[in-house]
Image (cartoon, rainbow, N blue to C red; front, top):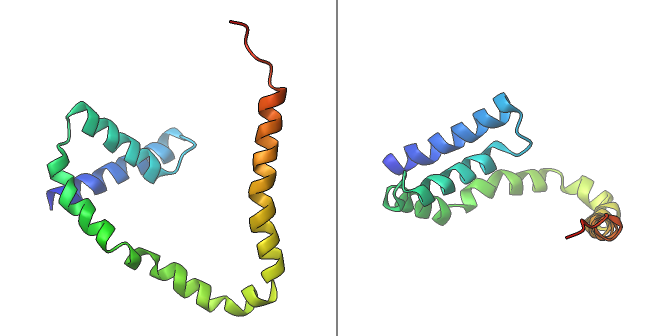
Length: 112
């Protein structure tokens, strides 16, 4: 129970930071970063959270069940719009990579 309490506490802290401070990261990511910092600083012992984390990882498929059910529920729409979905899945990341490469190329470099 201690491991679950620690994990949920860091999740709550991350969510609170996101909402109260307006940090532009998801609360769960902030919570994981806080947990990592606490682990590295020795404030939290790995043994406290390891068994709970292993249990959650072992049963991770349960967390994806709603996504699978939602996909099945929208299957007729996915069948009707499959071409647009495939094009957006292929072109979206490609556009992001090209835009990032162009921005990096055009960004002025600092003189050293």
